[in-house]
Amino acid sequence: MDDPTQAQQRLTAEREARAQLVARAGGVGAALAHGDLPERLDLTLSEALVLGLLLQDVRLFFCVLGHGSTEVGEVLRVYHRAGALRACGLRSEIEASHAASALRWVTGEKAAVVTSIGPGALQALAASLVPASDGLGIWYLLGDETTEDEGPNLQQVPKPAQGLFLQLASTLGVAYSLHTPEAVGSALRRGLVTVDHPHRAGPFFLLLPLNTQPSLLRQFNLDELPTGRPPALGAATTGIKEAAEAITSAARVVIKVGGGARSAGPEIAELLTLADAVAVSSPLASGVIPFEHPRNMTVGGSKGSVSGNFAMENADLLIAVGTRAVCQSDCSRTGYPNAQHVVNVNTDVTDVMHYARTTALLGDAAATLRALNDELRAKAPYQAESEWFTSCRDARRRWDAHRMERYAHPVLHDDAWGRKVLTQPAAIEMTTRWARERDAVCFFDAGDVQANGFQIVEDDRPGRTFSETGASYMGFAASALLATGIASHRFFGVAITGDGSFLMQPQILVDGVQHGASGVIVILDNCRMAAITGLQLSQYGTTAGYATDHRAVEIDWIALTRSVHGVLAIPGGDSPESLMRALNTAGAHDGLSVVHVPVYFGDDPLGGMGVFGRWNVGNEVLETQALRHEIGL
Image (cartoon, rainbow, N blue to C red):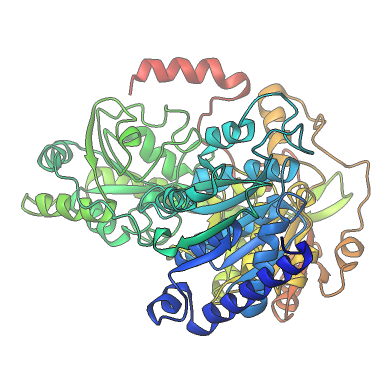
């Protein structure tokens, strides 16, 4: 028997040689095609897994390594050193997941999140709510307990039962345990279909038992490693004529533009004219219809807009395109009280049948809308200045006046700060305008910042703003900036976050510097979780902000963030002029910067954008549910 040290040295040498071959060839597929890499190899399960991921063009790995992932980590080290992939060591599994999600969302690049066993894997599972909710394909390589059950493994679920973590992961998404090393090809195929799903991608959890990771696969056939992409659906094959008849029979048509409609902007723009309709967007669809489009009523829902909610409330026909109808997006299913019919375009059978009285168009949004537009184009055109269009434009003017009034009063006296400070509407409008002028990508964090943000942004195209409303995960925006330093094509990012959200995930200060992030974190600080304080105030008259504020704790944000060498920390001041100077200074910095902005919280209506819809939360539940059952949609 070989000396264990010598055997490991030989294995490492062979692994290093293969990694260099792959790097020189430009990938595993090219190395196989050129004959540089044999089709059959003796290699460990972990190396076979990495080769399989490289074949699927997964070259980026966000890692928080531990004793549950040392073998995978060693393979990544060798291939990283050879230049075949990039692995980034991070300080939080949640941050790793958010960064991978942002990378896929903005650039389309795939990444894997690598964790240890137990708590680290659970952190990643929690953060996977983001890609699961927003339709983003992410790989998760999670350490797991050994398969031989020799006794409790450190950090496994402490219960005498099999596959407990597999059960957890399977509840949150699609999961596979590499209990049997020879199943690696099947596991990778299952992951490919999930991560690269053309319409509803999501997280894939690959559980790696500690004892199978280093298992040797002798003469493993690399042809078992899958490649390719699942095909996309085409246009809906049934329901087009029925939908066109329903649309032409309606007098007040609203189109709800969801995240699944991001690639169907031109088709929706034509449908707006053909159907004499107006558009209402979800936060995920910002820019699909340009903000200045005369038929764009902007965002609608429980935290919608005057114009968006007017259109939803008064429409007699809803065309839902690529939307899951999340509670806040359709006011907990009460957003369309006068709709008599729904035309629903979606690629998911469950979502396309969400509403009653529906003509379901199951197919790709752009292709289906082209077919629907062809059918409508043959019918008599509508008058551009119909009563419906005119009334909606009047509502849009009221919303524009509402917005401008807040921008015209950018500072208010705040009791917590003891002085006049900027309002969130003013700070967000200035920051997003500054970002648009520089073609920067804006990420919005959860809470009050997010809610005000999607009411304010004026996107002229998709891809300017990413508002993580799917899971509303606190800490997402700042963590997302890590993607700016990892992406193949670098971009400048602006993370707009509240003080509470930033404190959830401050690791970006270290990891952003280490991995070359390029962007600015704008911390809007009202000394509380204002979204919840606002609900307490509006629903129960509670003004103290029970369990949601930290006014008693004074934080020197500049000292805190400046303590990491390489981070430029700048006070944003209390005026539009001082904030603009701070943003310009941050924009000129080569790396990561932080702008701290004290902002107003209080009962002055000019301090926020307002609430115009219903929501099934708190003491609003009984009234909202009763209305839903009355509507029956």
